[in-house]
Image 1 (cartoon, one colour):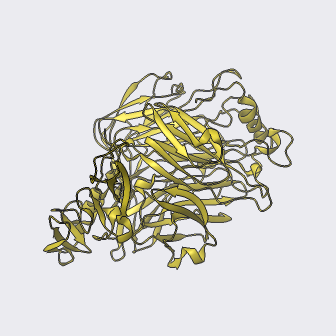
Image 2 (spheres, helix red, strand yellow; image 1 turned 45 degrees about the horizontal axis):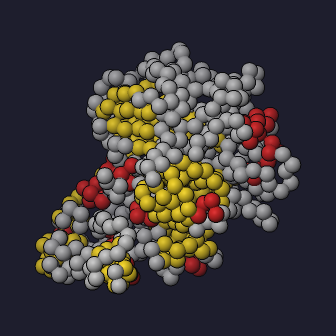
Image 3 (tube, one colour; image 1 turned 60 degrees about the horizontal axis):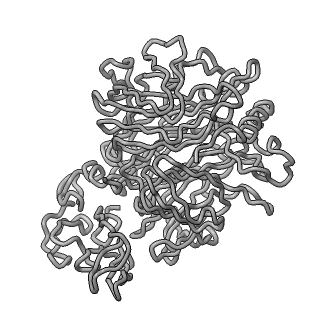
Amino acid sequence: MRKHLTGFLEMLIFPAFLFVFCGICSLFSCGTKNSPSDSNIEHDIPVEGQCEEEATRCNGNIFQKCISAQWQDFENCTDSGYFCEPALGCVECIPLRPYCDGELLKQCTAEGKEGALIADCSAISGATCSSGAGACVTLCEKANDERSNVGCVYWAVDLDNATNSVDDAAAAQFAVVVANVHSTYTATVMVTMSESGYGNPPAPVMVETATVPPGTVHIFNLPRRDVDGPDSDLHTDDGPQSCLSSLAFKIESDIPIVAYQFNPITQDFSNDASLLIPESGMDTLHYVVVYPPANPIRIQGLMDYPNRDYVTVVGTRENTTVRVTPSYDIVASIPPIPAGYTATPAISAGETVEFTLGPYEVLNLETREMTGPRDQLPDLTGTVVDADKPIAVFTGVDLALAVEGLVPGCSNLEDCSCCAEHIEQQVIPKTSMGRKFVVTRSPMRNSGGWIEADVYRVMAVRNDTQITTNLTDPSLRSFTLNEMEWKEFTSKTGFILEASKPVHVVQFLVSQMQTENVIGDSSMVPFPSVEERRAYYVFTTGINFTQNYAVVSLPQGFDATIDGAQISSACGSPVTIGELDGYTYVAYTCEISEGAHVVDGGRQPVGVIVYGYYRAGSYAYPAGSDMRKIFVE
């Protein structure tokens, strides 16, 4: 499934060289007992086959009975707002466990019914009810227990972005945007950074403190701290590339928030954004999916700095041992090494190397330059990052170029592959990877008859992973991947994907010349699984983008609101994606204004992906996701 350079160079690299000649084209809710998604209860599903008559089980939140030796759906507990319990069926609450009815902590009976009142958490200052903890806890303790993108401590990094002789996106404004998801309390949020170099005890200094009222966002415009090392001047990229530093930003709040990083926040010739995962949602093992660099070969006098894939690891605890096994060769630190940085060695593909990180410390590893047209194309997809303590892992490319192929009006690929774009995302940890996906297409950038495709990569992390979709291509209806194998394909529509074992599903937007309206560019979106969907999202757009969208997917027959308006009324006609677990899923493409927005699914978890386009760039990111440990071996 890995792509090699032979037969692929003309498609990817030479159009990217044309892109350089063109001057970069532009020139540049509090859960209740009636919320099954809040239960954090996971049921093991037996192997399909004959069963014992009248036996019962739960398939997700669907109660099944064995009839005529076959499992049959008996009741979907989500329809009634209840939980599935294997022996009892649909119940109001998990038997014999404390649960929350609003802010009332109650005891569930053995029959799964409402029991005695334990405590009124609203009567305790600063407390909230947590079903997971079975107690009245602080808001941050509840967020820690529930594991999602909502949390109180985050880490952000100014990842490697594009630099060339005309424009310098790496020097543009890097920002972290936080949103207060609470309906009552104001959040106090502070950002710190460390002034000590790698290997020294942290020396935190305050960057900025802000108060964020309920339901609003705040933008932290942060100082430039390139994790690939400082450049000698504007329009250069001559830092160490791979190195160790202490350049991370720490974001802390006294109540739960959500956070995103924009690199950069304003529209530039090279943009992207990433959903940030709080410490409470982090874990130790990560599998990387990314895309090859657009220009992986240096051309003297034309392109002095090749583009590179990278994996960036942030330490959150003292003395964290990190093990990295890259899928492509890693370049050694390029001298001179500035003060405060530590050099890293060259690493061969498949070699495992250990590093030690502490809070604020960053390991940045970038691919080596290609040696010639027959060399393998750099690609860090399949890289494994493991640690003995929770870490934050990011991946990206300073410039990537995703294309479908020839489009109307193009006689050769060089004419329709401009332009390259920065992509980045924080990697979903292994324990939060899922098996079921409702994948929505990006908002269309064409106004005529041509529909541009999205590019996808699906990667397995365990052997004999069987994957099915509802795509029309017979080769994509059913296929099998082994550990660290991945399949790349394009689709002009959304689709349903199910896997026998957890997988990564990542969407890449095609470049602007693949569209009739010549707008937007490549971006990267890791799709959260259906198992990790949420019901409530607060998010924001970038600044000065021409078009901003939220694509919302949910089961047909349900509705959600966006900024208080019904999505079915505010966002036009839905597009059918397909069937999953007895539901027909549909998607709404909602054009939104610049600024903060709220999507509320009520009791029903929904999926939300955020996009922004302008003449020479784009950004895209998932608006949120649970980070529950659903992949436990």
